[in-house]
Amino acid sequence: MPFRVADAIVRGLEAQGLSRVYCVPGESYLALLDALHDSNRIQTIVCRHESGAGFMALAEAKITARAQCYMVSRGPGATNGSIALHLAQQDATPLVVLIGQVSRQERGRGAFQEVDYTQFFGRMAKAVFEVSEAEKIGEVLVRAFHLAESGTQGPVVIALPEDVLEEAYNGPLPEPLPLTRKPASREDAAAIAALLERAERPLLIAGGLFRGARGAEALKRFAEAHQVPVAVSWKNQDVFDNASPFYAGHLGFGSPPKLKEQLERADLVIAAGTRLGDVASLNYSFPLAPEPKQKLIHIYPDQAPIGALFRTELGIIADPVALLDLVPQSSPGMKDRRKSWCDQIATFIAEFMRFTSPQPADGVDFGAVVTTLAELAPKDAVLSTDAGNISTWVHRHWKMSPRNLLLGAIGGTMGFGVPAGVAAGLALDGRTVIVFVGDGGILMTGQELATAMQYGAKPKIVISDNGTYGTIRQHQERYFPQRVSGTDLKNPDFTQWARSFGAHVVTIGTPDDIKAKLREALAFDGASVIHVKSSAEALSAYTTLSALKGKG
Image (spheres, one colour):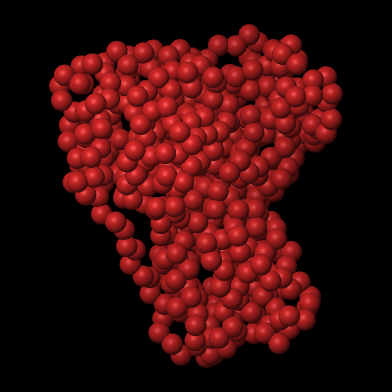
């Protein structure tokens, strides 16, 4: 058999260090599937929906901090898979999407399932390539991975006409391009130190670029050396020890006004490793756009977000982890003056994270399940959160540390939780993976439990079954009180549903069930589903249905 374009792609994926590709098979890229058959380095994970395949690749990219890949067929496959591509753009996560395309002689004729991917993804992806010449595939593939991982990371699309995949390839095998990054400089570190030395109430907002041992250690050293509280951006709670006296909370949807009131007393804000978008800045209110109330230092490895929305006293294009390690230690006198500021933040956070709840009459308080899991789970548990109120208890009450790994959709996409948990179970075999998902999200991508069973992943999937799209109901009660419309759900029996996949299932129907049932699910050596018959009254970690109705 001649060496084909499809074979060159597989060699290129191997050279990028991929262990898995995720897909739903399609006739438009049969040759690529055939080439993967001969790879002993890449496992092909066949998923049950293209969105699930995309979410799994996205989760593995978050786990590895490297671009990962998913493959979809033309037309419906590509549009089904587009949700993960949009999330990669929102979450600044590197991703390469391979899409089968109609053959070259059919292009432009409105052929079966034909889509112009340049138009469809042009504003969403960092780049869209369509490979119409066989000899270009090596160049395009390495450029795609390089671009996905450079600057503000994100998704890149490669469209592959099916007839090109079959053509002979005689060019060089694609090898990865080295990444170029602006090194941290001592001059920039000195400029940070000068502003720090004049600040009595500094605050660091840390983003996802601190994920991993190196970043966590840099944050810890910086906080202790300068007596600076550290707030973490949305879905990045695992980058800093939440039990540290310098932990200043989690900035994102649902952050209560009292937390913002505490933090905006700062006189210097250092935003590092985050683009400082609308969620991380509490809808552009902290820091305040366009004129922050505090002096602002913004550190990010790409120029684009720096100074784009906020007046920035000092903007630095650099690796934030390396740069913080270079900042000279604050003077002893200034550190002493910051002690009161740090103590006030720590006192507020300790009380804020404490869980108390009167037992609701209409079901189990999901917060009691989350806090009990936090007590029982291994200290290095991987946590995957779907979108919605179900994650609020995790963010408010689970004291995470860098030993954990938090996988969440910064872009707020429903359906991410289960596929991310499956991918984590495959990529991090041996670690406990816990998925938190609502009754809305589970029926979007919960069928990927079949993928977990097929490939041996062992996630513990916790379903909050309260019969409502909770987040939307919360907004509805606030803005259109007493007018429930489109948010009620009539659910299947999730206990029977989960058993049909062959998973181990426990059902929590009363508060007395919680600890014993969770112990059973955690102890089972395989995929488990924990069906929680949750209260709708206990709508989130921050409010109740009755309180919202009263406000309405």
